[in-house]
Image (cartoon, rainbow, N blue to C red):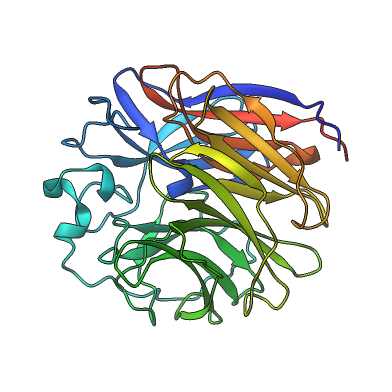
Length: 364
């Protein structure tokens, strides 16, 4: 595959003094040239081991919308109700007083009517409180391109505690979908990956399988794609902590998520602390995997597979101009004519901001 890409970079949401980050914790949806991304917005604070966020200030959910394929963006407030507080999926970045999990007392209702997972106008977003054995997760549904988010709705049928899930939904039919999730390990720490199934349009759920896990560190934040032959490939973030190199591991299921096999390591080094990948299908067998690199000369990288995720190219740089390694957490979609759009957070040494990169011109 040729690596002669054409790449353009665009600011999505950027304000001095702000810490805006982690699209991978939320989601990205596209309807032709209209695109919506959800992220967290807080304040810049003192520099820690990796992040420079103000933990005494809420990280509120925000979203941005583009109607021209990602070239320009307008920010919007997130319209969904956040149970327990102001912050969504950001408890680990806040003082105890601001954490939604510590305030979450009310029961979260189940979905009142089925979702059609094949309806292109419907979007589903998964959210959570934190990361550990006390974390709880839920989901939202939009039927009008993110202008209103209905919910939150519970994963009725699952144990509500210990789920620290982000959005990774694999539709199989109108009523049938897999939700690829992160759950706490038996000792209450993060994490290992589950394949959760609904066969009634999201009214009820059950755990279908667990992805293989060797117990080394953590396995979290799956990003999955279904190929034209029905096989599902899921790429999982692996790591052992903030000071050790992370990597990405790929799994494949040929029986709709009932069983999984490890198909290798697409990325051996995502830098100290690691970074999740964002997996998108390019055609019947080709895949692209975009991820943040937190090593020397941090930035955004991509690897590709020609054979359904069994073998991968060497990494290519999308950009390597970040000043600090506090970057990444991408989401990506494929737009018209095979153009990939990746949205992530970035920095040039000061505020953390949301950026987008459009990638086109790769070999077909």
